[in-house]
Picture 1: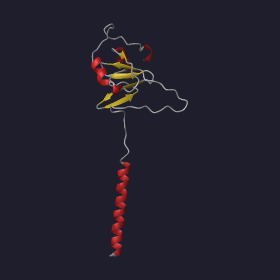
Picture 2: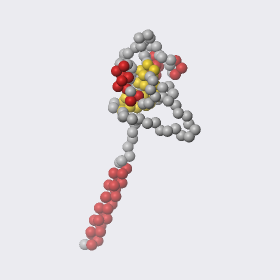
Picture 3: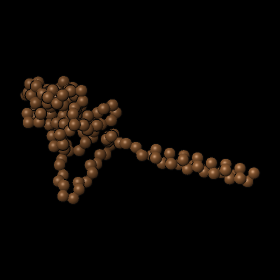
Picture 4: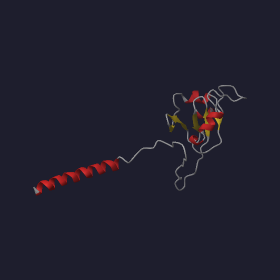
Length: 140
């Protein structure tokens, strides 16, 4: 009887250890990008220079392009993503669409509601015609 109790207690201990390990490994997650709110860039390593983002916004596609980083930032569902290529359109078509150079240097998610209201889809600059590409000839 005594050996049976020790076997049961040993099995319970193994199950508890396995459950604890499963819970602890399940706590590691993946964050794709900021979900709104505060956004902080990692500090540069010693000897690296700080490059500020310089965004151009494409209202027809609701895409932000950073020429310094050569990356596109946009919403994918409820998340903000940054990729090397624009979504659902080629870079050439995107660069040929109306655009506006923006004057902020943090993440677009912090400004998107106001930017989208000011520059709705199908927006065109008053002094430019559709198809003018706001200086992107060298970034194809």
